[in-house]
Amino acid sequence: MHSITMEEEQEPKLIKDHGSKEKNHTMHTSNPNPSQTIMRLASLAISFNVKLKSSDMPVHMQEHALRHTRSLLPLPSPSPKPSNTLIARALKKEFDTKYGLAWHCVIGKSFGSFVSHTSGGFIYFSIDSLSVLLFKTEVHLVRQQPPP
Image (tube, rainbow, N blue to C red; front, side, top):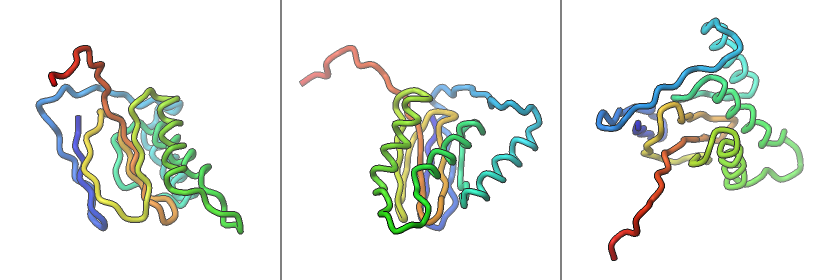
């Protein structure tokens, strides 16, 4: 598990919990050249007006997060923009469906956070004027009732 602390206008700080088991993860890309993969992600971020602030996530999942979030935000038009809660719910459900349960999403213009996440399951970015925090936690089955 990792812990990330973030405050407005500050860079996120990664704090490793050395007492927990780290999960190994690999990058799944169709292109074996890492510099081309990074350039593709950077190009996507520029075209979607995204600023990637911090990530511990394979590139294909980062691309999925950016593309899906952009698809949830309508182009400027007279129609009302969906609420941040609806956007967060849709992004969370998309990642729960595609990458397994226990994803969490926070969207807003100003918030602080301190979260723990599984290795390979964290991204923090801004898109237009919104900040997006998407992370995955571990789920453990409780087999015994807690004492009263």
